[in-house]
Image 1 (tube, rainbow, N blue to C red):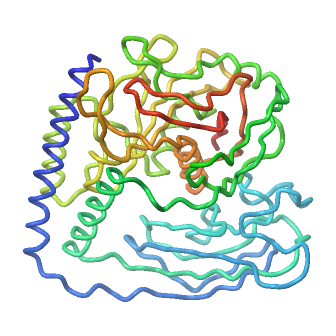
Image 2 (image 1 turned 90 degrees about the vertical axis):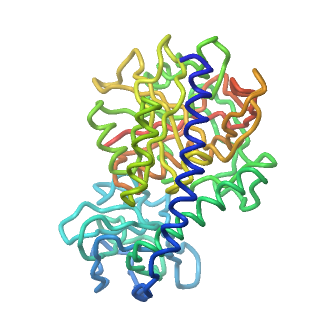
Length: 419
């Protein structure tokens, strides 16, 4: 796609954002703001075992459930809500994609388990009941119990919800333009060994943004898969073959598995028509629906544009800030399953395109954060069988994308085997 078309798309989207933002702000202010129902707070004690704990909490459509868990007890070998990679009780786990002993949950009595860990927020789409438990198939070999602080916040009325979304959108816009100040220590900071080459990359470099504490397998990837991953391009490119974003994750599964998993994880397929997108955004806004499918530019891998583009963002902030990625089907399979190569970045504002001086999106330079955000979203949606990191022989550690924006990385691919 020509750069001019991409920029035109961006300009139209910006117009939609600003006009819709103003219109919805007036609409929100004109509505009454009745007091929403009070949140429900409850502390649930969970003993590490294979049994489920009934929290006594009913779930309603639109509720937001926030769970913060910690370990109570003293002594050595305390249990961890994130799980313990060294646990010997790791066969036939209720949730194979999570570490043994981690805190897990169910939203209905007979539902599939989901990962909770130390922190989890859920948006309830179907009425149910909350159960908590440990990812164990037998007795625990660690000490202590989990204390889970559960807060259920009922859905708000239209006006309160809309004003909250508008305020959030404005804050995201400003934080992207002025710089981000909410960085925390990286829980994954360590020397990462490459099972194929023995090289190591330090992920604790200064300026690293917070990464997700993912439940990844410690078992090295199959050698044959590692050899195939070594053949993948390290970067995507634009239509003029300028190197762009780095390839930073891989999905293994059929096309239907990929689509179903991403839908379950609340990712939205990007629109492909700019005029249609503008009309759709305005229509959805007037109908009090969130437009989260802003078109994205076309980039190239394997000599062709992306097979799919997906995105996720705060309502009304899509133009300024969005999580997004592109995926391409690789020219090989693994054990009969399709392999999809992805390049993910997080748009956090606007900056000058160094190719032509015009305005383009500014990405979060710590691209590993988006890589792990993608994995975390799929894991929390219960769509991951197992995940592993893989460091290729020539990792991309620091570079610039096609528009001149700088980025840095630990160079690893996140390899995600879907359920």
